[in-house]
Amino acid sequence: MLKVELKEGTSVFTSGGEEVGKINRFVLDPTTNEVTHIVVQKGWLFTEVKVVPFDRVRTATEDRVILNEDIGDYNQLPPFEERHYVQIEQDSNAQASGHDPAYRSARAYYWYPPHGYLGYPAYGLGYPYWQPTTVQQNIPADTVPLQEGVDIISSDDEHVGDVERLLVDPDSNRATHFVISQGLLFKDRKLIPASWIRSADEDKVHLIVSSDLLERLPAYKD
Image (cartoon, rainbow, N blue to C red):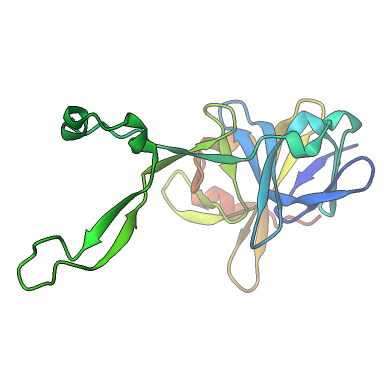
């Protein structure tokens, strides 16, 4: 295999030919340019989104990604995101009254209008108070989940294009280049070395080169 292409929307298959979803994003360590995982989404309305270690990818092209036989039970792979309830400090009045601390994990109901509010009857409908949650992404620390369309920003702070796909060295699992696209209707595509990345987050990739240099790059053709 000469190259690995990662592109959002590419179908992902097990070694036995079962389609398990489509690439939703790819996980990059911006300090080393190593691709650590791909994120695979199945379904549109009721989605299942799994994190797949990149070393479990056997082949990857623009049209098809095939996983290794040693992937194991695909359904047992971790989800990309997990939601956890945020622990709320126990109310001092509840402590004094001996309420079970487990109430902190239950949905509470508030009364509307407030009881005794002037001008309103002392009855109304309760509405739920949803306990705050936090979202945990099951990817390594200091890595970034990148999606198609992420902004590319030059060193002179110009938006020079959007991420279209990623080219990866299959021997090292390191990204070698980004393919970026410019324009809305007639897209001009450029090939950007991954070594030009200064920093990256989920919304933007910042480069160490100026927009003038990027403009002089030839158009990229597959």
